Length: 158
Image 1 (cartoon, rainbow, N blue to C red):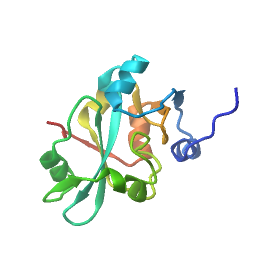
Image 2: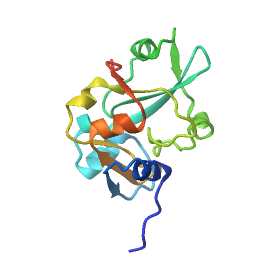
Image 3: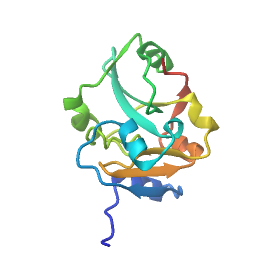
Image 4: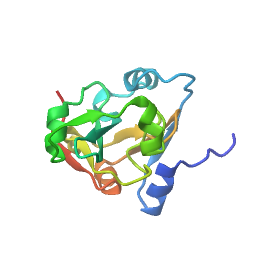
């Protein structure tokens, strides 16, 4: 099998000397994270989706939550000190993050946006996030992930 190309997220973890596993899977069409977790037999609680929102100030923020939960925009805004935040439109994901829908990793975006993980991440042994392109996941220790993206944790789900 040909050597898989490293994503920006993987290069950053390598540079930080953070251990991680990569999981590749076939993905002809991205539906949602729950569909992928079901396909791969992964627990929902430890598989996180990456969401990007814009604050009233015009700043962008990254929120990562378990795939089966929904972001609470009020709690999210409070966590980053904004009056309100609203989800980034799908058409703007690439221009803001450098990633595409379904392949958006919290690691290695175009800029280091303030990042908040749902507080449940700290109780996990391993966390799964997008590897930076469709069909790629990164599995690593939560503390390493939080360190890699300088994230804070908060209760940000409904």
